[in-house]
Length: 593
Image 1 (cartoon, rainbow, N blue to C red):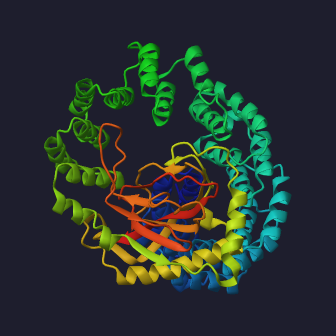
Image 2: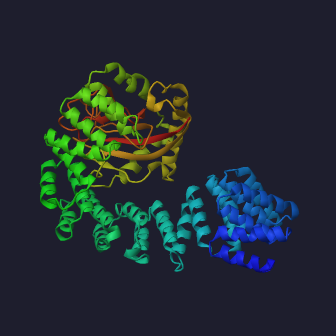
Image 3: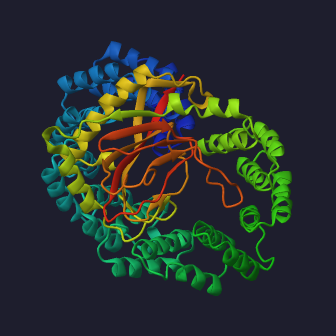
């Protein structure tokens, strides 16, 4: 086989995705013909595909010493993007554009700025790429996201609606378009796009997750339920469809929320559907009925660690502690390092007031992987209930780790506008399922990702105050916080809560943050009686068998921001009033040393 034939074989292997085989062919070619530039370039491409970035870069730099080819520059820039060498990548792409302003050069420059969240520069580069290739859907989707990020809502909406009419769009692109429509509050159009453009069998977890967000804000609940009911015949998404139907019924205030589970379990019982059904009964505190259902529907038919774990949980809540220990000990014997199983045993021991055993077991748990904020919350309860006051106060240093800041809400009349806008957003008839609320409503989505100017104004005010706080306060005395880089933080989630008469938060913690915060926007419904509607810390939410009380309380005030470790148990006391309590809450994540 001569050199040209070897080269052609390499190209065929490359096109077939056999990069290792293609690499051998191109290596042979360049050994026989050292100045075969195309073989060198394709060899660099193979090395890149095989994750040998250093080898690919070496070849490309040699090629550029021979010829300033824009393709070489673009490929080298992409390697530098993978290495996060942003400045080098930008320079190489700009040089490629000077040599030849191609679609590939502009779109990769747009991608670079997109990754850096430099939305103005990304917008310009993507607009240039679309001049050269006007029908490139991926570039147009990225450009629309730039418009959204820059607050150019009308332009984003116009382009989205035009794009949604195209017929040559793949499911992944449809997902992105529907997501953007949803993020711009066009939920009906997003729902219709998913409903009519993607066959039911084509739905996967990602699409179901987006559908979940959309339909919970959908005005035509009956239409949404009808569509999702049609998914119950598709095994791969049946579980998600049942969950979504339940939540639609629950959050619209219907008494029939469990009916879909009960029907599914009668017709085609399965272990995973039974598990989900039991978890929802448990969340509603229906322990006796859950035990009855587990006994009647299972009858030894399904044996899984998940169902055995739920049985251990249920019988503990019913006060059958020895049975609970038997079940959980069997699970730990099978999986001795499963943190969930160990923590359930700790809770059972606390319920039995065997606090020293709980402490010893918790010490072992903390040495295992996957320690979460809930693990530290449980540990704090063990320390407190076992009389280890000094250790408890080190972990829960209320005076040092709970910080209150007054946020300026009065300037530019921000306070009243925010209250009005958020009140309009609180449209749910019932508290969201699996949240700490008991009554009231909670906004959906990441509130601070809204491009409403007042919400963004508030976020800027908060971020400035938080940066100042974190430069002053030392959190290192608490082990879970000791490695945090306090100058590197992001808001991971945010939401607003509206409570009215008798509503409250059950005691809980936040696994999604390192620190959490609550800002009071309207406290007109609290403070009529001392303690009503106040936020309380330190009182565990471990069921009726573990008696506890709060150690620290903060009185709400308009504009008050309370910042605290996410692993701290916290909740609120109910209040009685014909007025309301409105807050904005969020979680913060920090970089670590």
